[in-house]
Image (cartoon, rainbow, N blue to C red; front, side, top):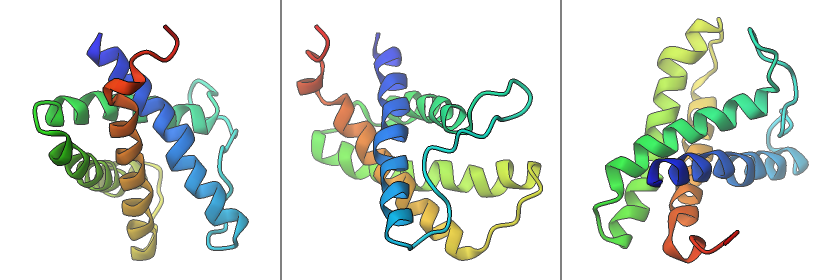
Length: 135
C-alpha cells in the first residue's frame, strides 16, 4: 500500500508543485514554456504532462523507499535533495540525449529548483495527516 501512496504522491506532486511552479514562472515571464503541456508523446500519444506525472510517480516510489526510515526532519531535507538531483541528472544524462535535446546549464539549475519543489511535495503528500483524505 505504501508503494501505491508513494506513486500517487509523486504523480500529484508533479501536477501540483512541479507544474504549479512552471505556471507561476511562465505567468511572470521568467520562463518561456507553459505548464501542463498536453502535446502527445510517442509512442502512445499520452499527453506530455501525464507522462511526466507518471514518471513522477515512479520517482516517488524510489525516493520514498530511500527516505521513509528517517526522522521527519531528515526526510524533508532528503526528499528535496534527492528530488532535485535524481530526476534532474537522469533527465540531462539519459532523457534529453535520447530526445536529441541539449539544454544549457541554466535549464539544469531550473530543473534542480523544480524537482526540489517536487520532492518537497512528495514528502508533504506522504505525511500521515494526508492518510485520511478520501477515507
